[in-house]
Length: 72
Length: 284
Ligand SMILES: Cc1ncc(C[n+]2csc(CCOP(=O)(O)OP(=O)(O)O)c2C)c(N)n1
Ligand code: SF4
Ligand code: SF4
Ligand code: SF4
Ligand SMILES: [Mg+2]
Image 1 (tube, rainbow over the protein chains, first blue to last red):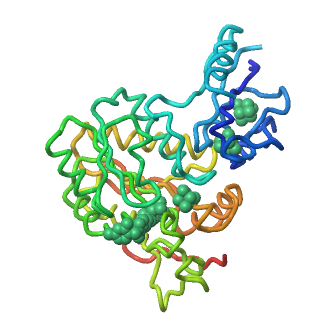
Image 2 (cartoon, chains in turn yellow, brown):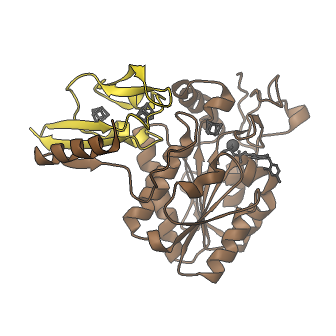
Image 3 (cartoon, rainbow over the protein chains, first blue to last red):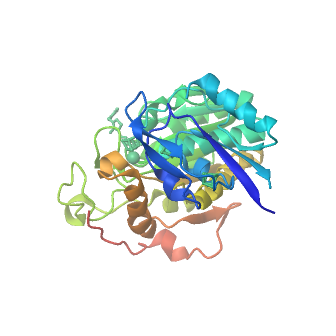
């Protein structure tokens, strides 16, 4: 059963620590060149390979990421 | 993204037939954590809050925060909280639990708080077998005050007060207080976990869940150490700090259960508890 995932990032709360990048098995996330209101390079989704595994959300210290998935 | 945009986006996904796999628990407030980027305190807060949420005990949980970086934990948990004087959280938690035996009471403490200034309160609460949960975040340093040596600082590890690395002749040995507490009759569950990978997070959460569930049994202290990072104190990026932690902290602070259901866990050599587990010397 394959899943298609989507993540929603609360970019204003992201601190750009990159811990989620290291945890993602599909290299879906990167740090933006832009910064948020606090001056952090926030995370953004760079491809559509997300499988909704929630690994990124598991390790995010700031609870920034919400994860969704559906069967495909 | 503004808050309303985020909620809108989530609703859109639900409308498109997606189901929600994960979102921040409501047991955490919306306050932005003051911790440094990538700090394990944030992840540990999340797991404790998720356990409280999943057990449905938000209205009967009381937390006790320490002095240290997590001093303002009460801002982040939407449960009743008290702030203890430095190291005294187990004493305060003792009083709260004895006066409110139906409440779930937990302390949340760093290594400076729990294993230095609060050693007496820690040991005696554990030895009395108070029916509480203790969450112990060991990052091997005094994070809040600028990275001074803690009892848990590794041999050879540089800190603000050991600029040439911790030297046993001068500074003594790292204190494995968790092993020590496991030898006390008043501890019922003693485990050491970490939160740097998805797999570690799942295990740590299961341990925290067990530590809270155990309060129903009234059999003594359930103690969860989280070996954590202090990127700022260690002067590393968060990702590098996690790797350094795996390579240097874990050999000295082995991950896994030490005591389960009142008995020393399988595979734990009794010598590890009473004799010195071989220490490694680190170079940072
Ligand atoms: C009575 C008293 N002594 C000393 C201090 C200074 N102080 C504040 S936090 C801290 C140590 C915190 O280290 P730890 O418990 O490891 O927490 P971390 O910040 O690393 O999470 C110390 C010594 C204080 N606030 N009160
Ligand atoms: S782990 Fe969280 S705070 Fe860190 S970069 Fe990823 S989304 Fe941002
Ligand atoms: S849910 Fe999994 S695949 Fe999707 S971004 Fe997060 S870690 Fe990557
Ligand atoms: S100083 Fe260390 S322990 Fe404190 S918030 Fe920063 S990284 Fe975390
Ligand atoms: Mg500390």
